[in-house]
Figure 1 (spheres, rainbow, N blue to C red):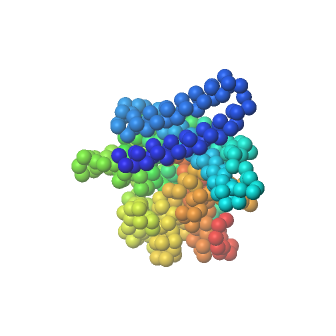
Figure 2 (spheres, rainbow, N blue to C red):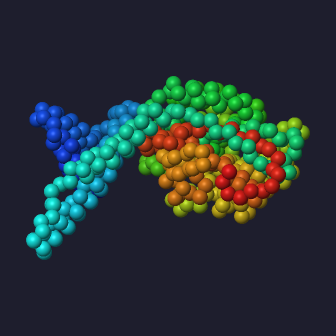
Figure 3 (cartoon, helix red, strand yellow):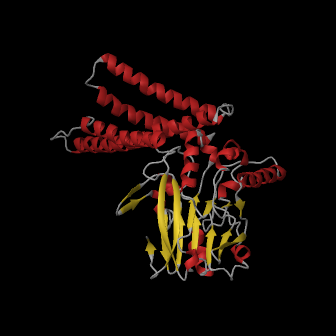
Length: 416
């Protein structure tokens, strides 16, 4: 209850500040226009408060996934957009308070303590930027799949494996999807690449295996010349659900394993597959989730998964969490040529233009999107095919990756 009261109090504060900015802006309009603006503003706030109450008291349980997703997103966008408005007007209040104090101390020269009309308008502009951007990212970018193609240098790569094409997808988070039509486009996009191998690097669902059931018939059409392979991510284990008992949790996992089988995906759980290609052997290694971050599980055993792969000409590891690369793979398994991960989503927010990349994700993860290379080893972090929480993307689009193995010339450091 205390958390609910805090959230409601914060919403009221943001509402109050944003209303002051709105009132300043509408001050030059007629009475009818002002009244209409005020009614719309407080009507949206009332709907937002109603949603919070309904959700807290479990009255939204019968709502559809789409209704829940977009209601939650609308409230988030609305109040997130009020934050910069509140910051601007808080600054104005501090200015006015300072002027009032100076007037008391030195009343000879009166200083202006009125509300700054300029700051009021600037506050609305500042709030309008996230409002428009996040709304656009939700409406336009949630299913706007982008193809990323990279060459991956591999030391001592046999000629028979040069040009091998691996198509990677990750982080589908099927429990967040509200539409099915774009998913067919994603599958067509994947299959058009005619990948030698197709791999999925974890987080098929948000919480429960049943979330993927409506989409099995769509994604079982994915094809790879030498097969489709998958691993689990932190969301796949049901760790974020309060299960009634351990039997229910186990049943959920059994259902998830069955779904991978129905998809035709070879799920690698601390194990490997040796794929014979043009007279050479490629080891495809897959581990359970392993993270260097405390709040995410360390279920994987790479020693078990990689055992018996010494006779392979190239080794590719599927590991959902990219923090495993620096913490586990590079220090102990220098013979793993390429690690494929996901998990970060690129924060679903950022800027990627030629010569410049930025995302809040970079303050959390050293490797957050794209290809990285240190010494003779490479890591690719997929930005994810789906979304979680915020049902959209801004600047960081959902991704289908095409990785082509090439012979390395000279080892490179850092991001390529």
